[in-house]
Length: 544
Image 1: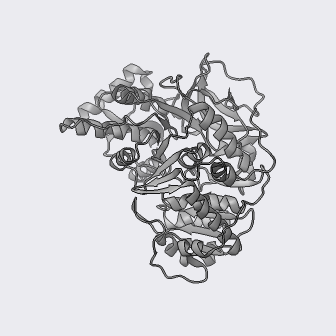
Image 2: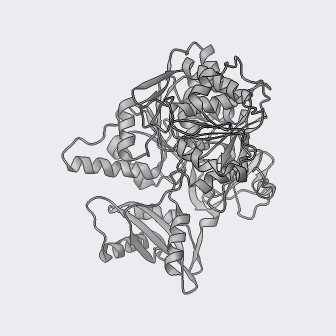
Image 3: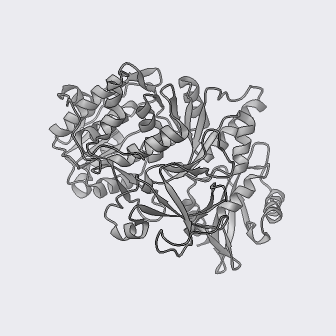
């Protein structure tokens, strides 16, 4: 049983307690050749907390962080928590209208961002950000450049340069005393249908998952160095590449460039990373990059420093995992989590990796696979092997969606969350993903789960990546596969037919994709997942 005192501020739990542990001189953040100790991050955090107070930002108000992965993200994040304000995060590469939506939706009183975003907001605040008291501007740096360097920008009463403002502020000595159930961070849904909604999470939610998942299940250690493919604004990475390493006194390695096989492998080599937060799409790209390097006569990629990688966000097909294990002999702990529960609640783990599965429930959580028409968590569960909707219970459950009570009522049932994801669980307790309930396609009167077809196609030697969607043809739904080929394979009608036959002979015949289109790359959303919404829109536009 994990419990926390009534007084709980996450800035203390993740950061200031490391100073009390005697780790002040230890490296907390690496950024190219630059290093930042826990004491330095704590000092900047104290100054930023004081700066928020001076600026009129009150306890419980939102601070919207729209920053790339640089050290400034850490002290803005922890400084907001130390002030007793609430963190909300956005993607600095998102379109201007998406960021304006976040400013208005969160009713933020402070925004911290890079010059390009700040400039786009300048003319929009009167319309969407009337509560905004300050917009602090941080340099948009390449990895290793000074994140506290001067920023050329036209400043005024609202728009201020962050670094000199921090330097002149008087540091706050202690974080604001908060109740463990006061709001701490808003985590956004992916927004696959409509605009993203924020899950309101409390202080204890993040501490709870850190204890049961990060420390007890996958085992973060003080000597770890972490690197992440997803960016810090995404809750998956905020946990694995900021909160979790800080909770054990480890080191996070940051790089601000777009994650590619080249930028990621450079970060791993530079920092000698031991824990890598990854996603299935990048695992596949790394394998292709490695094969290309070896075809040119090199030894390929060296991942010998890595203790383990994490995978989440989308299904990790068994064929892809087996290819990874065969090449690198480096464990990948695939798991399932959600913004509604903050983080991962079911996972593979050291000494217990079952390819194709999402592992077993994290101790401290409870899972139930219930029929799709279940009205509540007390319904009779599905039999082992039978597909149903996953429900999860745990002390990191969201208080609900901001400004959407109707959706909250459908999703949250007391301590329980209805995920909307389809799963089956076997006799031994291993969980298997079967797709989103709203992704199932009815083809010729039969239900087809796209994820099953995708996993099957990835078992073919020519396929590096695939996404299956439903398309309408003469009023009927049929399946279409968008396929990225591995090096050495070329698109052709013959290969398309071969892939269709591969599915017909492996799965039930009706599940084969009626159309196959070869593409160079699959579109991704800002969480790094394959963006099927974009594919559906593309196809609808073509057919219109």
